[in-house]
Each structure stands twice: as structure tokens, then as C-alpha cells.
Length: 246
Image 1: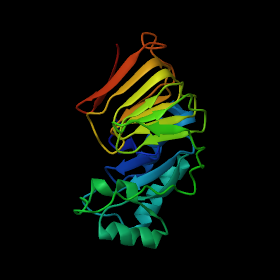
Image 2 (image 1 turned 90 degrees about the vertical axis):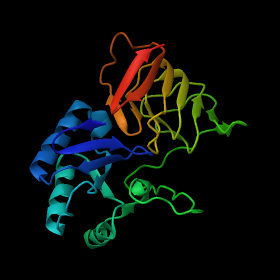
Image 3 (image 1 turned 120 degrees about the vertical axis):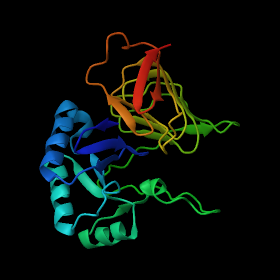
Image 4 (image 1 turned 180 degrees about the vertical axis):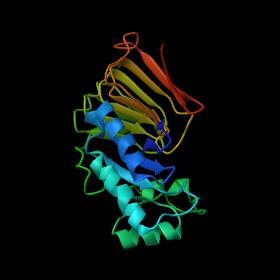
């Protein structure tokens, strides 16, 4: 996660960025998001984002929300909906003609006993992902045998993920648990996608675009020399994402 006075920016379980508004200031929001796009254009330019209003004491009116959405667009990102929140948020989304992104619902509303998890919808703005060959072992870990090519996404729901090959630039590996990459990681790895702060990422050959745990992330335009090509582990300490050789 990166944070500023204007907003927090987190990555969700399918690579959609969650822009959590902390104060209602469209100009400050646009400036902050423009800075993020400039710092990592390959990651943030035209990225699909969900506007999260849950941390505001009072829900903004329609005109103010429209200004926030325009600030996201002007920064070069694509707002695709609102994060699920209260009934007032649902009514606002209907008035604005926006979908509620249900994959964020767990952050606000505990599931009732016996409820099945709500699957995450794929917004129209998000390109379709190519299917990837996977298999599950007896312990529940999802194994991907071979490389994950650019444009592919492998997601291990409610389990760990093991990738035996390389993860190319533009590819994503995501897990609700830990991620182990036994080849080179040149794309993105996001562990603890449902908020598990104890998740870990282990990479044999570290050259990542991005790594994230429970939404807290680090972007790499240039890999630190002491980590490039090394075996690296990633973990959370509080809200700080740490990396070290192992």
C-alpha cells in the first residue's frame, strides 16, 4: 500500500486498484494519482480502479462523487465502480450508473453462517485473461506447472500458490495464501489477496514489477541491485512490506 494525505491505494484480489478516499478533495486526488501514474506508467496508466468511500464520515453528494471520478480519469486511470459499502452507497451507485464491486464486500459486511463467498465480477474495462494450466495437490495448494506468460493471470482462491516456471512481464500470480515462484518473477505477485497479513511471497529469481501482501505493495521500476536475480522473501511487518534475500 502507498498512502498520502489524499488517499490510500491498494490492490485487490484480481489486480483492480482500490482508491480509498480519505478526504474529499478532487484536485489533491488528481495530483496524487498523477504522481503514481508518472512513477509507474506501465502499472497505473489506464488501470481499472474502484472508488472506495467507506472511510469518509459522511457520504459525498452526487456532484462531489462525479468530481472525484473525473479526477481519477484525468490522472489516466479508469474508474469501474464503487466499493461495496452501506445501503446509501448502493443508492449512490445506482444514481451514478456505476456497479458495486462485490469483492470488497467482506471488508464491510461479515458473511452470515452458511453464506457462500461472493465471486468477484470482472468489469468490462478489464481485458479477458488467458486460461492457465493448474492442478491442486492433496493439501489444497494450487500448482501451476511451467511459465505464466504475459497477459495470463493465475489465482489461487482460499489457498497457497506454487509456480514452477517463470512469471513474465505483464503476467499476474495471485493467492489468498502464500505464493512460491521457483522461476523468475518479472510480472506481479499478490499474496494474501483477501486480506491475510500473514501471507508470504518467496521468489527464486527476483525481477518483479510489483509485489503485494494484503493490499500493501511495492512497485519496482528498477530492482535494487542487492535483490535483482536473488532468492527473495516478502512479508508484512505492521503496514510495511519488507523484502530480504534468503
